[in-house]
Image (cartoon, rainbow, N blue to C red; front, side, top):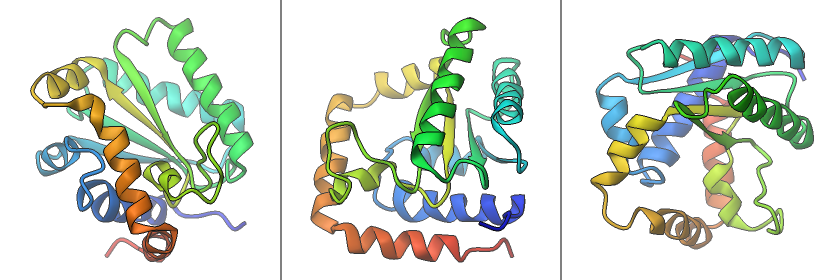
Amino acid sequence: MPARSAIDAEAQIRAWIDAVVVDLNICPFAKRELDAGRVRICSAPSIGTEQALAFFADQAISLINGDVSATTLVVFGTGFDDFDDYLDLLELCEALLEDCHWSEALQLASFHPDYCFEGAEPEDAANFTNRSPLPVIHLLRQDDVAKAIANYPAVDDIPERNQALAREQGSAYFLAILERCRSQMLQ
């Protein structure tokens, strides 16, 4: 697969955030943070696992050290297209958070073009709640998450609501959105 420019990768993820995460209210907290300019999207260079982990660590340190962003989406435009390779990277990132004692400050969310929930069938439309145009590891500050959910009724119902919505919309609906997102370029 040809390398994607960082600008193209970031544009694809921004289009996906707008079309899926915000427009379908997959994350009821995203719009407020986007409007406040507190969502950072950064694209890892075309690199292997060791370099990807170092890039991820740099982004984690930036958030811990008070970056004005509330959240950072680390996009992997190349190198982790295979879902199993991505899951291996995700596991290493989670271990890094634990080993460096960053898990008290940060948490992760994961998104991938082939995302499949454990125990789910790959064709289940519910998987599209975590399917993005490119592999993404989302870093969130624990404090910001705690504040957001403290003021949101029935936060535990969000995943079930999202999966029901995804099944209602159907796979074809989400595949069309992902295709549109993949064609995005920053203007």
